[in-house]
Image 1: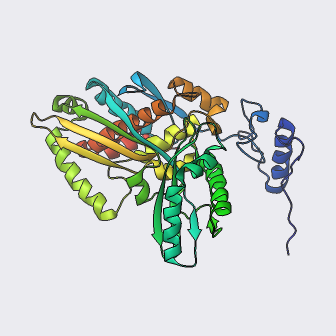
Image 2: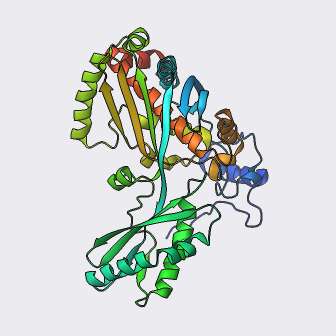
Length: 391
């Protein structure tokens, strides 16, 4: 056995500058690293309970400003300037260029078409027949199950329970709306209460696991692409060939032919997203605005669909099927992240749909820029000019 040296903690009050400094000294003694920059934070660590444990300091990610981007949404309307947190050179410039194109075309129409957050328990039975009968009982008692779930939350609402039988198991997906919170913890608590009620009430008192893994939390899945997780958002725009050629040096016919080729390649690869790069813009916005960055795994999935219109204009759309965003709770209230949300007009309650529309519009802007840059020969040269750190 080896001796374990625990990280210093104060069980009574661990979120203080003194405890952060104590941990820094602890590391300096063992590694020789002084953490000069990690220790420079602009806020008091007393704000952090619920966000991090064993607080040490901050990761300072550069934030660049892209825009303006005109968004024609039901919740976001007008020109927005977008903070993007990234260490990838060229990214902010590229997104800004795509935003210029879309703004000159009149903007991006963005629409939230569905909201749904899940927890997916599985119930276990001796036989498939008993599992089937349990499913029928569950359907008949839906109102009671909903009442048990919603007793744990002020804003969560259970609107559906999907059933997927496999062998002697019944996999369920409890679908909720969660207001302006991302909702994973909320739905976990609500579903646990519902499952306890089910186990106590059903004559068989069946065993269950709170997650049977078909909620695919922080993992991409085909079921989320079909059924939605978080928000399903469509961003769309019509781009005249004249605008595309003037700014991007690509005509719409060439762009459409390339779309057909790249779509076939995406199908061949089995990719989660058939457009150029949804994850770049989503990750940069998530870091800046205090989202759970691991949700990029689900949120970047989507479908690009395009049409070459009879007049030569180009219809370009992005459908994000599993976009998970919050404007309340989690990391959104921390000082830096709150400021970035306020820049977007997205801080606080009643703003999550606005943020979802802006994120989808940003993804479309990034795709317009990168997709055109590859065809115009700007992709490599722009990274050479802006994206490499040289001594």
